[in-house]
Amino acid sequence: MTHPWNYEATVEEIESIIQKIESGQLDLEDVFDKFAIAAEHLQDCEQFLGQKQQQLDLLIETLSDQ
Image 1 (spheres, rainbow, N blue to C red):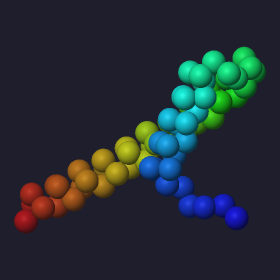
Image 2 (tube, rainbow, N blue to C red; image 1 turned 30 degrees about the horizontal axis):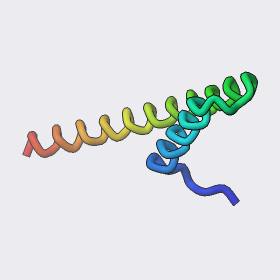
Image 3 (tube, rainbow, N blue to C red; image 1 turned 90 degrees about the vertical axis):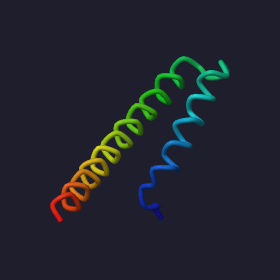
Image 4 (cartoon, rainbow, N blue to C red; image 1 turned 60 degrees about the horizontal axis):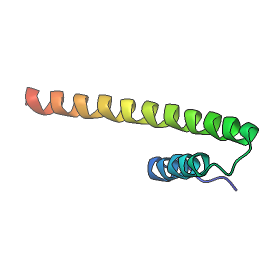
């Protein structure tokens, strides 16, 4: 069962990946794999935050018009 996407959980996963990479205990191939996963998560977070910023901008504009 997959869970719905969650910003906070994704950030925690990114932080966990960074800790694993920084620990120096991963093989080089695993470092690249984890890095790729973290990069995808960062793109998801950036897209999410961009969408939320647009929503906030629209709400602020709507309130300013009233």
